[in-house]
Length: 124
Image (cartoon, rainbow, N blue to C red; front, side, top):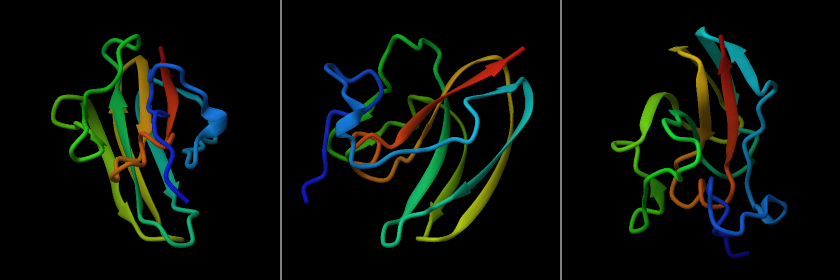
Protein backbone atom coordinates (compact mmCIF):
# COMPACT_ATOMS: atom_id res chain seq x y z
CA UNK A 1 0.00 0.00 0.00
CA UNK A 2 1.35 3.45 -0.85
CA UNK A 3 2.03 5.67 2.13
CA UNK A 4 -0.34 8.61 2.43
CA UNK A 5 1.09 12.10 2.23
CA UNK A 6 -0.18 15.54 3.16
CA UNK A 7 -0.93 14.53 6.74
CA UNK A 8 1.84 16.68 8.25
CA UNK A 9 0.90 19.31 10.84
CA UNK A 10 -0.63 22.39 9.18
CA UNK A 11 -0.75 20.71 5.75
CA UNK A 12 -3.34 22.35 3.47
CA UNK A 13 -6.59 20.36 3.41
CA UNK A 14 -5.53 18.20 6.38
CA UNK A 15 -7.84 15.21 6.90
CA UNK A 16 -6.33 12.93 9.55
CA UNK A 17 -9.02 10.32 8.94
CA UNK A 18 -6.90 9.36 5.91
CA UNK A 19 -3.64 9.12 7.87
CA UNK A 20 -1.83 5.79 7.54
CA UNK A 21 0.18 6.25 10.77
CA UNK A 22 -0.24 8.09 14.05
CA UNK A 23 1.10 9.02 17.45
CA UNK A 24 -1.19 8.43 20.40
CA UNK A 25 -0.38 10.24 23.64
CA UNK A 26 -2.03 9.10 26.86
CA UNK A 27 -2.33 12.77 27.85
CA UNK A 28 -2.56 15.88 25.71
CA UNK A 29 -0.94 18.19 28.28
CA UNK A 30 1.35 18.41 31.28
CA UNK A 31 2.45 21.15 33.67
CA UNK A 32 5.70 23.02 32.94
CA UNK A 33 8.91 21.53 34.29
CA UNK A 34 10.25 18.01 33.95
CA UNK A 35 7.99 16.03 31.60
CA UNK A 36 8.56 12.31 31.09
CA UNK A 37 7.51 10.40 28.00
CA UNK A 38 7.38 6.61 27.95
CA UNK A 39 7.30 5.62 24.29
CA UNK A 40 6.40 2.21 22.87
CA UNK A 41 6.61 1.27 19.22
CA UNK A 42 3.51 -0.87 18.73
CA UNK A 43 4.34 -1.60 15.09
CA UNK A 44 5.08 -5.19 14.16
CA UNK A 45 7.53 -4.35 11.36
CA UNK A 46 8.54 -0.66 11.30
CA UNK A 47 11.14 1.37 13.20
CA UNK A 48 9.78 4.56 14.79
CA UNK A 49 11.05 7.37 17.01
CA UNK A 50 9.48 10.21 18.99
CA UNK A 51 10.79 13.78 18.78
CA UNK A 52 9.46 16.60 20.98
CA UNK A 53 9.30 19.85 19.01
CA UNK A 54 8.35 23.23 20.48
CA UNK A 55 6.03 25.19 18.20
CA UNK A 56 7.32 28.76 18.33
CA UNK A 57 4.39 29.78 16.13
CA UNK A 58 1.63 27.13 16.16
CA UNK A 59 0.08 28.73 13.07
CA UNK A 60 3.12 27.79 10.96
CA UNK A 61 4.01 24.35 9.57
CA UNK A 62 7.26 22.70 10.59
CA UNK A 63 10.22 23.16 8.25
CA UNK A 64 10.30 20.12 6.00
CA UNK A 65 12.98 18.66 3.75
CA UNK A 66 11.15 17.07 0.84
CA UNK A 67 14.21 15.26 -0.46
CA UNK A 68 14.60 13.51 2.92
CA UNK A 69 10.82 13.22 3.50
CA UNK A 70 11.39 14.43 7.08
CA UNK A 71 10.86 17.49 9.26
CA UNK A 72 14.04 19.57 9.43
CA UNK A 73 15.05 19.09 13.07
CA UNK A 74 17.97 21.52 12.66
CA UNK A 75 15.50 24.35 11.90
CA UNK A 76 12.72 23.21 14.23
CA UNK A 77 12.95 23.72 17.97
CA UNK A 78 13.53 20.06 18.87
CA UNK A 79 13.78 19.54 22.63
CA UNK A 80 14.65 15.85 22.81
CA UNK A 81 13.86 12.48 21.37
CA UNK A 82 13.52 8.80 21.93
CA UNK A 83 15.65 7.58 19.01
CA UNK A 84 14.88 4.73 16.68
CA UNK A 85 12.82 2.05 18.37
CA UNK A 86 12.56 -1.35 16.77
CA UNK A 87 9.08 -2.91 16.63
CA UNK A 88 7.77 -3.76 20.09
CA UNK A 89 10.54 -1.85 21.90
CA UNK A 90 10.16 1.02 24.38
CA UNK A 91 12.19 4.02 25.48
CA UNK A 92 11.91 6.91 27.90
CA UNK A 93 12.66 10.63 27.68
CA UNK A 94 12.52 13.23 30.43
CA UNK A 95 12.89 16.83 29.29
CA UNK A 96 12.31 20.19 30.95
CA UNK A 97 9.63 22.08 29.03
CA UNK A 98 8.26 25.58 29.40
CA UNK A 99 4.59 26.44 28.77
CA UNK A 100 3.59 26.32 25.13
CA UNK A 101 2.48 24.15 22.25
CA UNK A 102 4.51 21.15 21.14
CA UNK A 103 4.36 18.41 18.55
CA UNK A 104 5.31 14.81 19.24
CA UNK A 105 6.43 13.39 15.90
CA UNK A 106 8.02 10.36 14.35
CA UNK A 107 10.66 11.74 12.05
CA UNK A 108 11.54 8.60 10.16
CA UNK A 109 11.28 9.27 6.40
CA UNK A 110 7.65 9.84 5.30
CA UNK A 111 6.19 9.11 8.75
CA UNK A 112 5.46 12.74 9.77
CA UNK A 113 3.77 13.42 6.42
CA UNK A 114 1.77 10.19 6.85
CA UNK A 115 0.18 11.62 10.01
CA UNK A 116 2.54 10.34 12.68
CA UNK A 117 2.30 13.27 15.08
CA UNK A 118 0.26 14.52 18.03
CA UNK A 119 -0.25 17.94 19.55
CA UNK A 120 0.88 18.37 23.14
CA UNK A 121 0.51 21.38 25.42
CA UNK A 122 2.60 22.38 28.41
CA UNK A 123 0.69 24.52 30.90
CA UNK A 124 1.80 26.83 33.68
